[in-house]
Length: 216
Image (cartoon, rainbow, N blue to C red; front, side):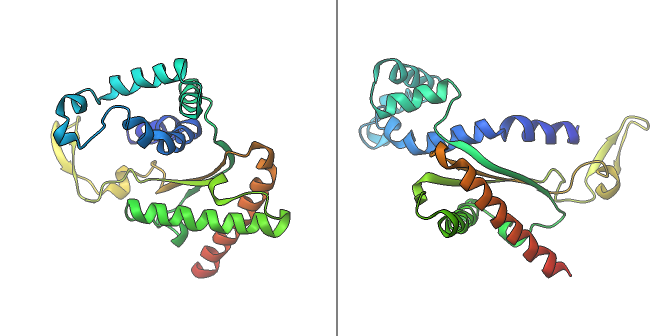
């Protein structure tokens, strides 16, 4: 079950296209929500009541079909699963303990680590290719997944004895991957993907070398 759950998150929820769509939606979400609510939701409860998943999808389809501006074009791309953002780099890391550049304790920390990594990659691009990319042209997305429970002696149902047993999760989860990280780099400038790929590869290698040096 744990392995199936792990690969479900890895292959569906954290799929590269799904993550690219999330980046795209984050950029246009506020503008889209403004079409639903023109004031404080507490003062516009009837408008707020219509702001659900179905309402958002319906509005997105409407914008894709009728709005020929930037907002409509980007919703059309999202609905067609062809977001503006293209993946230039991907690496997967499995470690028991997170290296510093992947240590995500909360949402703010995640954003901070992603921004710092993006800055380092952009610096590498500039060093080799000049100012071909701007900060708004690059996004770093770090996904962390740890399936092991915090309580190491959690009780588990044993179908053989039909009872709850306390098995150390070290034994039970032996076949489950350690903490897993996916690092992806996206760009909206498709013509510079090759340069970004090389820069991201060099930057991540440098970060990994720091981890190896520290461990030694």
